[in-house]
Length: 560
Image (tube, rainbow, N blue to C red; front, side, top):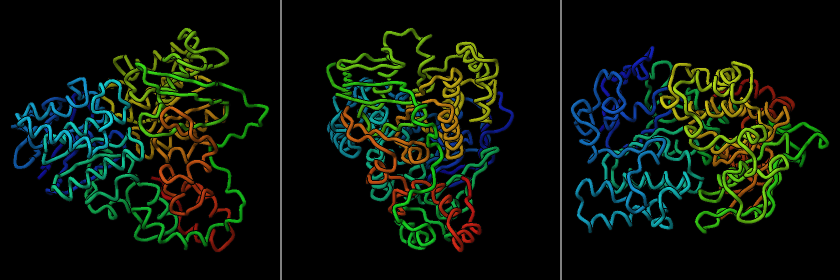
């Protein structure tokens, strides 16, 4: 169905090709998962399938891509619209109408689908993706996760034979991701749709893949094979595979179910669950209580949009030296809470204070010294023509020494060049750049809205290290996220919102380990809140007496 014939792509001004001699065939009715580090060429490979590369993006294409026998050299994206449905990393950028139902119908109108058929497909898609409750809503009022589901639905209504998805679950809560992935499974198994899907959160999707296509740097060279074969040696693996490597299991498990069957053997090597605490987790605040200070506070906070409540009676105190994760389904009010803390929205009830003052009353030059926000769309705060200029502007705005921002970028994303335009970076690279711009001012309170969207596991580890360093210096960090593995890695406290209200607020182990929705893979495999991450397990193995320690020495952690 999709055939890459010695495909190489080089963009203007680039020193090397982003894809280098890719020879891959994706069969009809197959779900092929594309993995690789940020900037390895995943988005470029996907855009080749419907001709966006090179007809829209530019660059030099060597070789050819055939889709259902049609060459992308001879066919523009509009010529392939009846065969290929494409959803990019930024779904809102592809919207052409103002409302949900109009967006779902637009592609069918362009293909002259009869009205009776259009109505039926719209209803089926609304049910399939669980978005019936937003059918009449303006697109601008939806959360990022809701917009992502609408974007997927907009291409599904055209009944494409090939579906190309770039990070389709990156902005979705666990429940929403499960619904979307279940829909994709049905499309593949029941209707024979061919799906090419790029995703960094492998723990969500690897069990669905028929094959995995790994793009490795440099040059985007491709390796394709069965998931177990590719992930056995891949530098990018989900926690359950990393746990299997640590335990010395062969073959490595791909799912929690597979790992749970082997868990008893590993639990025998771990310290007995006698109620004693697990070894200290990285990122936990070591500052004494007297050193902690209040950074922000919400009392009975309420916020509404056009008469619709987004937050209701929220009470929350944020202190220094602590990472707080704000979780909840799409539309629960997470982003609104961060905006309220920044003074970007005004309370309709209650109050909010940052540094003891109402944020809405503060000038931006003052606010930046109290708190900084990295939004879901990094381009909202990136406005210059190059990475180098963005870094110089950040240094100037923050009054920081020259080179401060660039040093942060080099630490978190060493492969981002100075001369690249921010909009030409990958989604993950743009997010890292935006994070560094905000960090340059070293605000006491840092707010991150979906900070791992578009980040591979290696980049996420660098982000975790940066957050831990900030906490050690006395900063407070708030993460609004759906990434349960990130929460397990770095957060000490979790606040869960539902319909704008706080429904849980406690330690990470207490809140997420007991949840059927938010529990990380390791906690689920071992059925214990004592071990939330592979690092927790490795620390326990290292601290346990022989022969466990000897066994663990033979099975070292393989960093993804």
